[in-house]
Image (cartoon, rainbow, N blue to C red):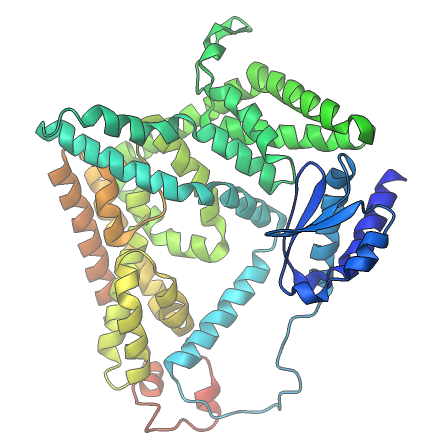
Length: 502
């Protein structure tokens, strides 16, 4: 009955704030439902104030509806669910009543971009499975941390350079503190973001995750073993915060509203905290150790083959949305050893993409439209932003996407082989790729050799991606269809309307 009451309150509020299309963001504090609005004029203030459950409205950076402690925590998830349900039930805008039959369309960069957008949209629909949606939510936990990982990673690299050269010794301790401070508390940020993403109170998730990095856990004897501060790392923080969210939501179902602000936070931190200390830290620590050991073994024993597979399959993994599962693995490796050995290998997929795009540019000398797209997207691709080339050129064409994967596999095999030969290195942060990864490289063989190997991998990826695409990326029909200037030679008939990837 209580749930029905809060759902009814949410349903009454939604049309009075302009409906689901007028909602930009939804959050809540201790007493207020905070809504980001697209159009303030669509809100009916008087009708909102007249609702029995509404204690008042406040306009600040967001539109705030005062519901009171306890009630707001129950109404907000119902409100979010109603907004999401309404958006799912709204049919996407389409091209209705489009006449059937062939339409003459020139093969231009714009057409390829439309095909790429359609493929991307279709892939997004296919990715809306429970597993992939869960991976996307996990990615949303870690992606906001990437700027700090990059900044601290570069500072750590600079600190290592100063340490090795003996320059500015007085600055080295300060840089070490700046670079390490965030990583020492990353579990807290993961816990905060996890609770926020899964509908709990963010600070409670952070509070439970903070137990993992608290130095005092070393005094706790759990089942005959002493805990180590940081044991379980980000994986433990993720699990602890997820448990905290479930405990908090469970409390909301039976704790009286008058006691909610006292009882729910206490039970959430206590129950989830005890489970973290006497279970999750051990389990997550074992998983994290296994991940690190497996990554080391994989590249030491089967480096070339492992690099071939990882570099060749990364672009398809991106297409399937499965690459998001690697983000916690990267973060765990960085937390353990200071860098992730997987990222430089996966970055070779971008090198294959660049080589493929250059081959397309050379093979289509008369198609100014596609060549212009490649020229404009190439600088970003060299810095690791490959999406414009993927969805604007290679994927719509079909074959060049496959040959780009071949180039990525070759680059990955080169870097993997060097790992197998003892030149081990990785990236101190996740996010950047291509040339942007150079400042983040870290290895045991010295910066000069590390940079040379990574640069060599990029060169192999470029060259193989180019050669594979130049010689095998086009059929005769594709060249006939594409290798012309659409502005001067109009396409006609059914042939111009067939996919270029045929």
